[in-house]
Structure formats: C-alpha cells, structure tokens
Length: 371
Image (cartoon, rainbow, N blue to C red):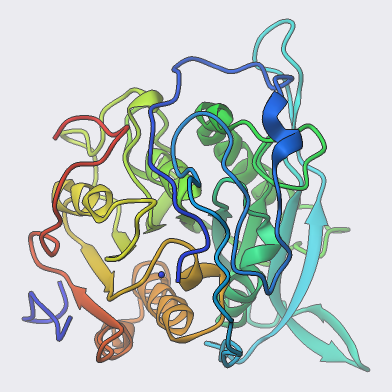
C-alpha cells in the first residue's frame, strides 16, 4: 500500500479489436494464417495499425484513422545510464516429437558507459534486475523501443523476445492462436538470458541479478506475462513482480489465476479507460482478484496502443510509474513509492490507486474466465 493512502489523486487508438476466445491446446508452430496476405501494415506516422489475425482478441474492425498526427515530445529518460543493446538468437527446443523448435529472437537493452565514444556494459554498478517484456499481437518489439530503453536507463537489463506469428513483418504470417505457447516461450527466454549472463564472452556477463526478475507486457503480451506471474498453469517462481499493460486473464491458458496458498506477486495493472480493444473490465478483473501489493494506473481517455508506443503524456506516465514500481519491488527503494504517487497522478491524464478494488468498469472481459 502507498503509505496510508487507498485512493490516490486518480488511447487516439490506431486499432479497434474485440477479444475472442482462442482454441486450447498447443498449436503447431508451422501454422500460418492464410489471410495474412491481406494485412496492411501502416508505417510509423500513419494513423492506422495492422489488422489482427484470427484467434483471441484485439481485432481491428474499423478503417484506418485519417486524423492528422501532431509531434509529441520525446520520452524523457527515467535514469542516468547510457543504454547499450545486444541481440540473442534464442531457439527453444521442440517439446514433443514431430514439433519444430521455436525461434525467439530477443533484443536486450542494458546499462552502459561510454568509453572513447563506444558504449560498453556498465559492470561497475552491476548486477541489475532483469525485466522481460512481451509485445502485443501484430506489433513489433521495435514499436516499444523508446519505453524499453527508458527502463534500461534507470538501471535494468530489459529483454524483449519476438514470439512466433506475432510480429507483423514475419514472413510466415500472423496467428494469434499461437499465444497458448507463449508462456513456455517466456520462461525459456528468462532461462536463456540468465544462462547467457554467466558466459564471459557475452555483453551481458555479470550484468543480471537473477534473484530480481520482473515481467512487463502489453495487450496479448500482458496476458502472457500475467500467466507466468500469477496463473497455476504457467507460474514461474523466479518472477518477483509484474506490470500488466492493458492485458487480461485468458481462459485458453487453463489453470487458476491467483491460486490459493501461492505467494502474492506484486502487480501493477495499467489500463486506458477509453480502450475499446482490451476493455477496462479486463484489467479491473485482474486487479480486484490480486492480493497486495498491487497498484492500478487508470489512464484517463487513453486507448489501447498510444500509451506504450507513441510519444506523449501517456507514455511519459507509463514509463515513470513502471520504473517506480520496479524500483520499489525489485530494488527495494522505499522512496520510489512516493515517486509513484506523483508520477501516477497527473491532472486529466492519469490516476493511481492501491485500494482494494479498481475504478468501476462496465461489462465483462471476453475470453477471460468467469469471476
């Protein structure tokens, strides 16, 4: 809880989609969506986004926006570290005979120092907590680069895998049903990053604190992160905190969310209250069922993607509050709780609560288990 407070002085969407259930069971990763050829991926600066594939949902049923965009200020850094990057070729072995291995290329941002104009890993202040980020469906990891680099600048190693059939540039196409495989993918990426950080040739050598691991994910990636943090189907005990950005519980994973007797994983739930893709009821369902410590960041008037991929006031709030949250839960910085109050309560933009329930939201969450 934030001191003695319960209620704290509390997205132009590029895609509209409604959640639909996905089929259960492991999906053959060779499956491609035949309709992928019809996808129109609009480059940055345009108002529209990619049409969603079949399966669970965050699906676009509306024409691309023609609104004129305005230039927003670049994301102000949350930290003082320079940021270096590296990439990992992560290949998850097949889990059953006849199934293919799964390619999970992973981009990593890490605290760095400049030496003679060259960025090198900053090991003097290592190790750093590890954050693993999961992207939304039909969005590339690069769409979130500003947000991920910001967290790295605050003293985190940030790893972001690209899941199969999720990136709109994937020549195999998009298949949202493959999400049922992503919790296992995420756990494998965590293991691979930790193993890589033990290898002296790697830029990550000595940088990662394997005892302090957090997850963050947007949209479908939020569903995946929540399952690995707090669902008996997929829970990874190495995870110490999770930030769920416009995500939901998902029946297709099976298991039980927030199982009785399990330790509470600190949770930050972020949701735009004008989101027509991931309905606010999806996030309030998560928050209301979770145990403490928990926080709900209500983005006032925000839609589904802009707070996470577009420069502007919403992205600033998300960047700051997520950093504050992990500073509290992974770094043990008590002062960061006070920072959350200021960063999460911005007039006409955001309200933060750590009360028992989230702000009321109408309706229910399609594809989620019944409350």
